[in-house]
Image (cartoon, rainbow, N blue to C red; front, top):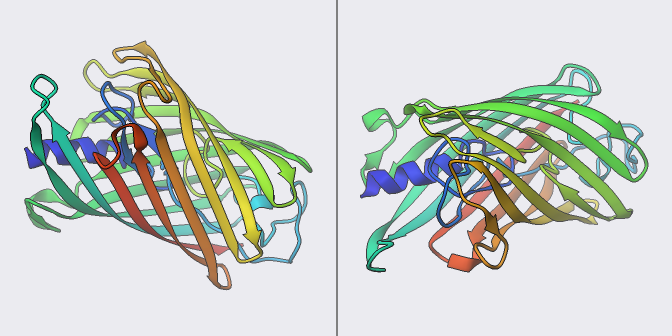
Length: 312
């Protein structure tokens, strides 16, 4: 049972950098069932993975369309030319399972995972990078026993299409594979689009943070009977002070193209991904992130500690 929960969770943590939500146990993060969360894969993702973020240090007061700013909210999702970004995320996740027929609890398990990643600015518009996650500890043992070093690997590219005073748009794609189960793989494509409502407040879709896939709206599972879905994530970002950046996002819907099921906010899930980062030192940000599906609150939640370093 614990191995099944581990597979379920790792499928959702494929790309730590992008704040993201997953509805299944495959690398695409888009199968059927209740939402499972993980960074990651803001990252992210999100993810994702999709998860995690950064503010960076440069000349103060930069604006969108101008030089790289020390205020994250002013920057595009890509890095400047020759810029390097690295991150490390430590996540504690609790996953519970319920028998869909009887409604009886099948138990719960807690996992600790480490996400690592890097991005490099090939040009002012193009960033490439990689992410990787490993299982540090679960009910079955600790790293590196039983191939716990084999985790989700992601390779991504992001191209900034537009970066003007109020609007920044970046297009990206990534390939993801779980080295512990190579049938668990997927490709994703999407956008990071951010619109400034004020100098401190923005709305966005995709990944609002540098390092990691720009967006994973389209998810194509490459494994056996892999699902294909299209998701609509939205979020709000706030530069509360020059040292403090926060974000909150959710997913309005996930549409099934094949081998999956449609899911809509409130009726099927209420995914929430929130994080805050603090400028601890020059080019170094430390933060915390929380993810859960409020429709099934407590069934699969993540608390993550984030560290980001940028050289530009």
